[in-house]
Length: 348
Image (cartoon, rainbow, N blue to C red):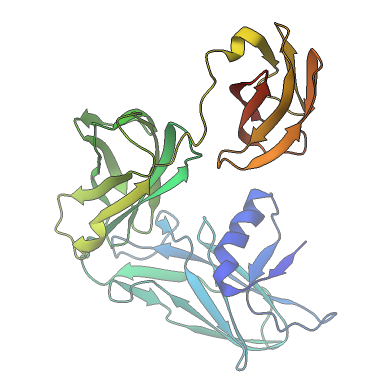
């Protein structure tokens, strides 16, 4: 595979997947007006950010995800520079212009602002590098928080994303505020620099312009202090010694509605009557009776409390096929001899 035509909104996602799958000569863009069988010509180059304003060179910062628009006079398409600042665009015979666009034109200058090429008059590949320089001193940091794993359990994983939108390399601190009465800090990557009551602090050093970094952390919920449906508030803040141009995006508030334990956990009686194995399981779950008891039905529920499987068996050894269930946590209710037994298992 050498070329993928995609919508402009999907470009970065598709390019990341191409890199993830190890394709080295495959490119994506949104200019899709190609005639099958005709000769291809190549536009390519590199994008650098010259923070010191002394001329772009190999030691300067590679500009990742700079949007470049290619216009053939009728149709236009976009592509983005990769993690090394490189871009690559295949076109067919014709006249083309290439125009780079930075997210905040007030902060930066681009040289050249646009370039033109005419295929077949010019040789292929046509190489045009772009040099981006600061238009002034603009300190501009940004932070956001997202929930990345919260599956109705007593723990949740979150991610802090912070980036340098400005023109100069910065160092500073990321702070996370939360209610220590209902939440306990478990772990973080990278490790916290400082932990206080209701607060976690990470120090960051030399965050370059256009660079984004992430912090993942795991929190444990204090049940029953926290109840199902309670709203948890997390406040993220990023700061440095410089005065911010846009302080509004230096603070981010995440509201997370806690949901847990929609069914009972295993009852104390279950282990008196049954042995359950293996747990976790891929295909089959075994229930073996320790005492003689009349089993009327076995019902499996997902974490939302919805019934997903029902089994009727009174054998001493009951083998349940769970291979058709999705990976996740499940609960079992056993109706036997006018009693209810509860347990749970994990489908891998």
